[in-house]
Length: 101
Image (cartoon, rainbow, N blue to C red; front, top):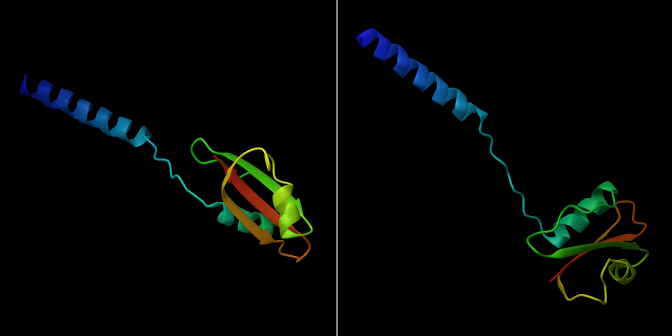
């Protein structure tokens, strides 16, 4: 009887260890609008990197910082809470990221 209990205990421990290994963790990276604008300028890739919380995000490109900002989605229709602007890595143009309420 003692051997059976030890075997069952071993199976339970092994099963729990196997289940524990199947859990994964997620890393959440919070970036600012300026971080995202810098990344687009550095890589030349014009893309959304994600909205944070319930905020909307607009991205824009232009030959001046002001034009890039005005070219962002929702500009003039929503209230901005964060703005990031960066010059293209080749010096030709500007990227803007605007996060709105």
